[in-house]
Length: 186
Image (tube, rainbow, N blue to C red; front, side, top):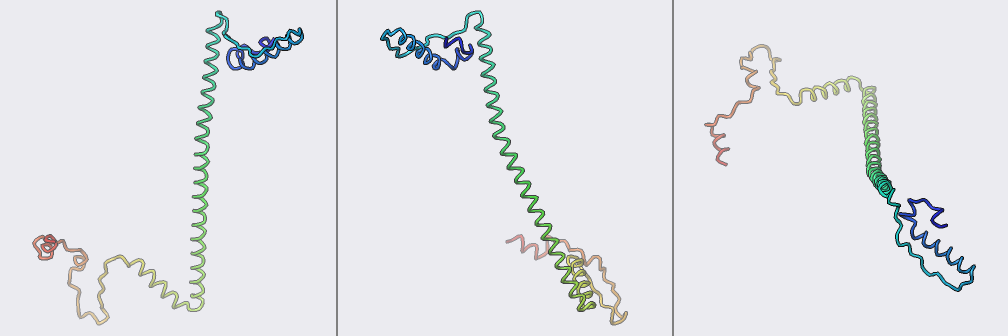
């Protein structure tokens, strides 16, 4: 009765303890119905094997179920690893995008504020502001260049005969020069 209500797979694998407990209860009930005075204490299933004709098929099914369980566990493990990593990466990208947005907005606000300040100065003194902006621009443009300035306001009495293009070139250090010799001795 206890075995007849169960699946063969469960009988041969996982339900043996439950089956033994159920058989004990059924047997005890029968003994009590007969008023035999017998008390069934333990039922132990000694062997639960499939018939020899289907043993190989049973083993194949059992192996397939174990493989299924293993693959499902591997998939869960992989998902538990990949999903949090992907969520973390997505969160990082969102934070970087938010920081970029805040930086761009702050820069734009700063530029707008600077423009407003320059405009206010321009409204108060247009000529002075124009001159200052021109000088600041020239300073930025010419700040890192080599310059030679020739004053011709005194007339054309002095003609620039120097090779100006060669003055801008940096002279190569002569190894025999005293400065080069002093550097090598240090």
